[in-house]
Length: 170
Image 1 (cartoon, rainbow, N blue to C red):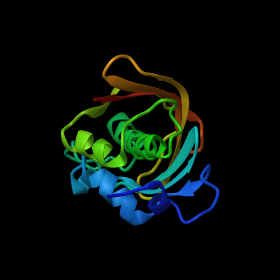
Image 2 (image 1 turned 135 degrees about the horizontal axis):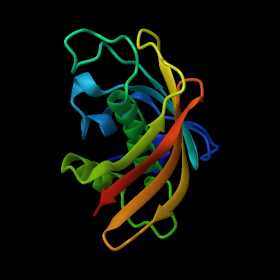
Image 3 (image 1 turned 180 degrees about the vertical axis):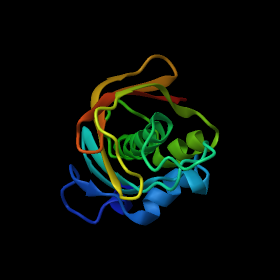
Image 4 (image 1 turned 135 degrees about the vertical axis):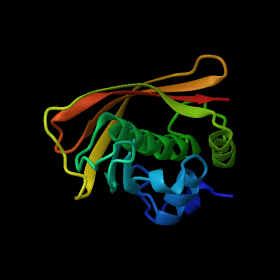
């Protein structure tokens, strides 16, 4: 079981470099190993930054060598997945009554996903180098039986911007 004290080695709970072990625990609950692109995450509620490492494009006959929409969505979804779980546990969401272990069980049962993703690419990003991405929670809604996070997001050097809607079904 994880707890807030295990989530950080820092005294300032507003800033967290997510430990590798914890990244692994969260991502293993939902993603196949070959699609775990998030390698590092830094959380500063309501914002999160991630570093992603991608291989060759997996769905084309010839490797493309640059980031496309499906990979961008997976990258930013993984960052939202990690941030959402930790922010729930740390009490950043008013009146949230869900433990981190419950969050992991919901992930394992496919109860979280990116419902909507839109991104405008203004610059091509090579996948041979690590790629940085950011999300910022713009709104959180709690309809009955759900948490819905609306994020502004960017990937690459910040010129590629979009929106992401992350849903957790209870």
